[in-house]
Image 1 (cartoon, helix red, strand yellow):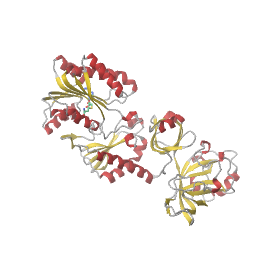
Image 2 (cartoon, protein in one colour):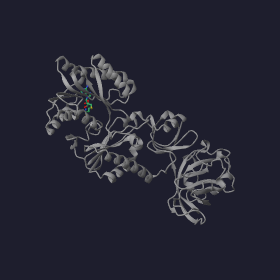
Image 3 (cartoon, helix red, strand yellow):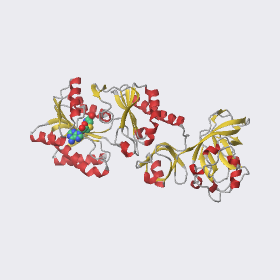
Length: 554
Ligand code: SAH
C-alpha cells in the first residue's frame, strides 16, 4: 500500500475527486508530506494528491518547518511548486477540505519578534523528495487549521486530527463581476461548477480558482448562490457558522436599537441589507418572527434560533415560513413555534396607536412594519375628510384619523376590515371601515360627488415580476387618477408602491401621467421609502422596493 494511505482506510476516490489521471504516477503518491506554516488570520491551503480522500489525511504528520507569523516566504520546500498560493491555479483546484491539526511539538524561535498569533497553518502536500510534481497531479484542499495560541514564531510539527470536505462552487467571470459589485445573488447560469448540495455553506471560487467568498447554495432556485462573506476569510464549521451569524445579527439588532423607534414592533434583520441574505427577523414586543427564505438559511435556522435566544431572550420565536419564495427553493411552507410559546394574538404599539396582531395568520409577519414611518409622516398632513385605501388593519386610518374630521378605510379583505373596527375601538378613533374593491369604490365615490382632504393609496405590489409591469402601470395610474380627482385643492395624496419592478422613476412618471389626466397641478412634498429598519443596500436594487410620495394638489 502506498505510504500516503498507511494510516487511512482503503482510498475511496469516487467520493472525493473522481478518477485519478492515468499518468498519476504511483511514485508521486508514495512520498507525500504536508508542510505547515503559521500565519495570523490566513486560510490554510493544502495541496494534496489527486484521488486522495480527506479521511486519508487524518493521523498524518505534518512536516516540521520554520513558521514565521510575518514571513510569507518561509514555506520551504513548497515554494515554486506551481501552486504557491494554492488557489490561484484553477487547473489544480478541485476540492476543499477542512483540516484540523494538533500541534505535537513546538520550538519557539528566540531571535524573532514575539507575536501573539492564532496559529493558523498553511499546509501543502509535497513530495518529501522535494519534487514539486506536475501541477496537474495536485488539488488544492482547504484547511482552516488549528487553534492554539503561540507567543512567538515557532518551529512546529503537527498531526492532522480530522479532515472533512468543504462544498465549493465555481462561478463565471460574469458572476465574479456581479459579486465584486456587491450583489450577493449569483444566478444559476453563472455557476460553472457546483460540488455541493442544496443548503450547503459553500466556498465560492472565481473562474481562475481564486476564493471570492462564502455563500449559501441552493440547488433549486434561480438564485443559486447568496454570498454571506467576501474574500478569503474564516473557516467553515458549525462554530464558525454560529460566530458569523451572531456577529451579523448582533450588529443588525444594535443598529435598530440606535434608531429610537417609537414602536414595540419593528424589523431586526432585513435580509440582504444586513448581509444576512434571505433571512428576516421581526420583533413584536416580547416575541420574534423569523423567515428563512432559502435552503441555506433554512438549514441554519437552529443556529439562528439559538443566537436570537441568546441576544434577545424572547418569550417565543415563531417561524412564518409560509411565503411563496420558499416554494421556489423546494422548501415546504409552514408556520411553527421554534422556541418558547407564542400567543394567538398580542398587542403592539406604534406611535401611540395600539394594534392587535395575529402573528400566525396576519399578512407578512403580522403587520406592514415597513410603512411605520410613512404612517407617522402622513399623519402630519392629515385633516378634514380622510380616505385610507388598501387599509389592511387600519394603520394609516388610525394614525391619520386622530387628526381628521371623518375617516373612511377600505380593504377587500373582510378579515382586515374586522381588524380595523377592533383597532379603531381599542384606540378610540372613529373609522368608517368598508369592505370593497378600491378600484370600484373610488369610481363609486366619484359618482356620488364625494370630496376628500387627505387620501392614502397603499396597494399590494401590482407588479410581482417584470412581465406584470405594464398591467401594474395601468393599475397604479388608475387609482392615482381617481384619488387626485376626489381630492380637494390643497389636499394631500399619500401614494405608495411596493413593487420593486416599478422603480422610483417609473412610479414618479405614472403619478405624473395621472396628474395630467386629472388636470391637476401637483407638487411633491416628500419622497419617502421603507422605514429605516428596512434599509436599502446600495448595488442591490431589489432592496429598494417601497416608494411613498406625499403630494399636494394645488
Ligand atoms: N396600508 C396597510 C397595508 C396595506 S397592504 C398598512 O399600512 O398596514 C395591501 C392591502 O390591500 C391588503 O390588506 C389587501 O387585502 C388589500 N387589497 C388588495 N387588493 C385590493 C383591492 N383591489 N381593493 C381593496 N383592497 C385590496
